[in-house]
Image (cartoon, rainbow, N blue to C red; front, side, top):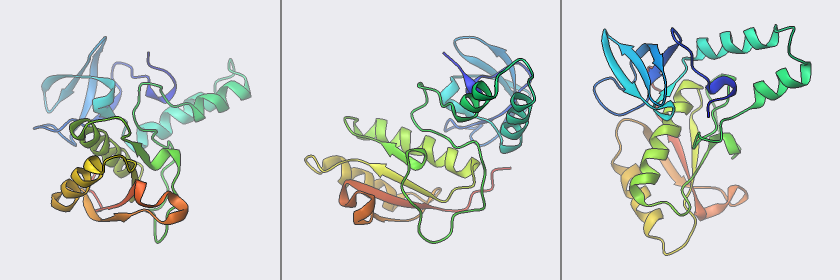
Length: 193
């Protein structure tokens, strides 16, 4: 189920991405099973893999340890670096770059696919993507809602208009990025740690 950089081990440092009292807090993995037990501020919390993320420094450490593994071929190392979990609804880039400035090209790694999802599922996926973008120091996320009846697009944009935590601004994507079937969201700078 877990593979590549998405595999967690006991004593790994992680950040809680689930809304609630521990949202954004750093913790340490205490137990791995169907649910992952994380110690956050001395309190054991049971979370799924989708509800946690690695701090950027842990991603670099994991990447460094795989690239120096003599038992692994170079192609396997490269595949592991590029691997994203099929369970992850949003692909998170393992390379942090300076915060995006100006125009940002739409890619798989900065796009949330909400097609065939209801509003609540879409909102959850968007929050997950916003959190991952903040961890990766990216400032733009694209939301694919399609045209359809227009209900999902309308609800997502109403929610974005009222969001005070994540959204700096939003607008329909440029025509070359898919036009009105996508919403381009510029995120506020987050204090991750």
